[in-house]
Amino acid sequence: MPLRNAVRALRSGDRDAALRLLRQSQVDRPDLAPAEILLANLYVTEGQPDQARQVLEESAVLYPEDPEPHLMFADLAWRQRHITDACVQYQRALELAADFNGSPARQAKLKVWALAGLGSVAEARGQLETAGELYRELLKLDPRHPQARFRMGHVLFGLGQVDEAVEQFRAAREFHDSAPMAELTVAGLYQQAGDLTQVEPWIQRAVDAAPKDVVPLIAMARFQLDVRHDAEEAGAFVERAVQVAPKAREPQLLRGEVAWRLGKLAEAEKILEKMVLQAPDDLAANIALTGVLAEQDDPNRRRRAEELALLTAADNPQSADAAATLGWVEFQLGKFAQAEQQLRAAVQMPGASRDAKYYLARVLYRRGQIAAAQQMLREVLAANGPFVHLREARAWRLEVDGSPAKP
Image (cartoon, rainbow, N blue to C red; front, side, top):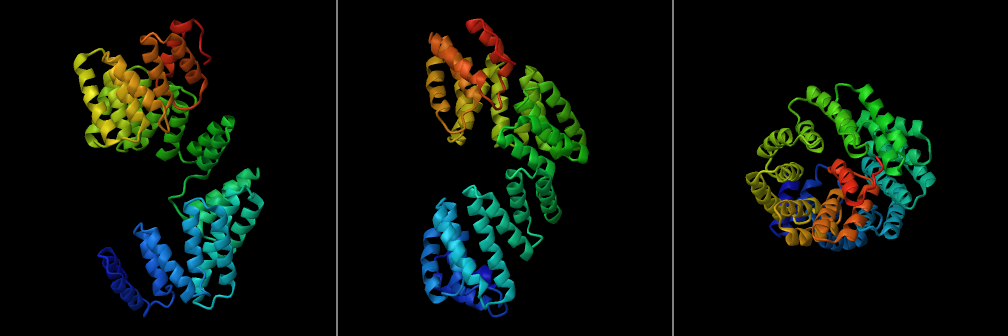
């Protein structure tokens, strides 16, 4: 109770009351940090890092043998990617933890914290052998630490020890059931490394290992849809996912996306309407439904698409997909100047998709900027990543310059 009241006091701006309550909480909890350090933790939790730093400066003077102020300084530096500063503080904390005379439980916790931080620093610097040594030391102190197991798996994968990495990922999942399946983690790492030949087999291993688990089925559907661009094959896995989890939202949304990519617009509309009705703020569902409505030759549907696109873009001003969808709708409505302006802005936003650039190429071509449109289309077709309109883009390239796109 004192801890909860301390939070309330801090939120009301009464630091002294918060500190007094934190001291009360220590009466029956000798494993807790000193009150000033707890106060700094509360400031961090409340999103007030500057106030936390001020209290930590005081704490470092009051408790020079306590590692926790250094650990908190290190975490704050890490969040700002000040890696060297973080490293110095983590190292100092580990040195202090070795001779710390507080409770044994707190000493062990502080050592684990310091080793985890130093492991992250070593990973960030590409020092995988060093990171592995640090995580091994950590796991001696806490063998059930799921995040350390997970990071150790990443390190081993980076060192080419895939089987050993899988063991660590499986251990992480054993100790924490929210951890991803080992096979899916390895598939993701291969995809990050650009080795797509290994991705599908590892996802398939996950599907085979847990045929009644919707997660690997969704992963395979996504891979087929966004990497292989095989909507038919993706659809087969989506249907299996629907059978496994008929009430789950993601398989149904994927169903709509698959229908859209296959050009089954009426079917896609029916599915996506339901998705948006169930969750009006779902960005992906709104964008997909807007695109499906805009691409049907029906003035009423296109007007509704414009309404949806305007609302979605206004509600998600940082979304490149929302901005691009609005430009695409304007193109479908014949508002070519507005569409060009909107899409030029959209393709400059972080995370702009291949579809956004395809939309702009279509607008440029329509406005007589043929060479620019051809060049952009070539770039879009040569790129990697999800692409809803790949089928249409390949067909359009034949119309634009007569050369077939590579499948």
